[in-house]
Length: 311
Ligand code: RIB
Ligand code: CA
Image (cartoon, rainbow, N blue to C red):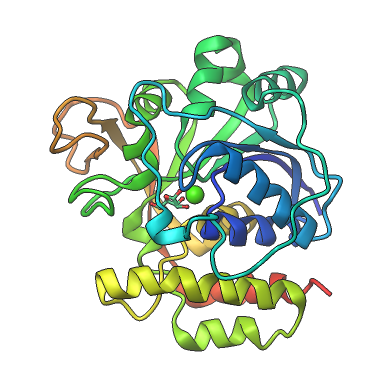
C-alpha cells in the first residue's frame, strides 16, 4: 500500500478530534505532524487538545506544534457553544504528558515542505491562518504542496452567519490568501458535511465498539450533537472534519467539480462567505475542486471500521 504523507492543521474541537482518530487508524496516511491554530477554542486549548487526542490514540510520539494564536486581521471568535469550554466537552481526557514542539507551527510547515519532494498534502480542519502566514512568509512552498484538502466554506448556507462557514469566517483574509494562490485546492463545505450526521444509530454503533477510544468518541459526539440538533433540528451533528480525512483515504466516496471560488472580506453582512461561481458568470478560471456529494453510508462504514482498529 502506498502511504500518502500529510500534515493536519486543526483546531480541536470535537470533530477535529474524530478526524485525528480516523487519520491515526488509517495506514493509507502517513501523518508527518499536527499543526494547531486558534479557532473553535483558543490556541492554548487547541494545542493541548491535539496532544490529548494523540495520547488517546497511542500516538504520543507524534509531533504537535502550536501555530497562530489569532486571525490575520480580525479578532478571534471561538465556538465554545458547539465544543464546550475545553473544546473537547463530553469526555475527560488526562492532561497530556507528550511535549508540544518548540518550533512554531508555521515554521514547521515551511521547513517540512521545503525539505520534501512535493508529495505532501495539507489537510486543513480549522481557520487557514497558519497556511496563509506560511505562504506569505515563504511563497516558495507553493509548488512543494501537493494539494490542500480543507473543511471550509458553504455554497448555499453558512453556520455562523447566513452565508459564512466558521473556518472561513474566523479568518477570511487568510482564506483569501489561500484561495488566490495557485495551490491545488479541494474544499469540503457545509453543503456536504451537513449530509454526514451522527444519528443515534450511528452513535450507538460507535459506542458499541466498546474500546476506550470509541467510548471517548461517542461521548464527545453525544455532547457535540446536542448543539446542532437543537439549532438545526437535525437528527444528529454534521461530522465536518472527518470528511477531509475520509476523502484522503477513499476519494471515491465523494464527487466534486472545479469552480471559481472567491472569499468575501469587506461587508459586515457577508464577510467570510465563499462565493462559488456555479454558472461561470465571473469569467474567471476555476481554482477549486468543490466537493458536492458524499456516500454517507460508506463514510460511516469507513469511520466505524477504523475506530474499531483501536484496542
Ligand atoms: O464549520 C465547521 C468547522 O469549523 C469545523 O472544522 C469545526 O471544527 C470548526 O473548526
Ligand atoms: Ca475544525
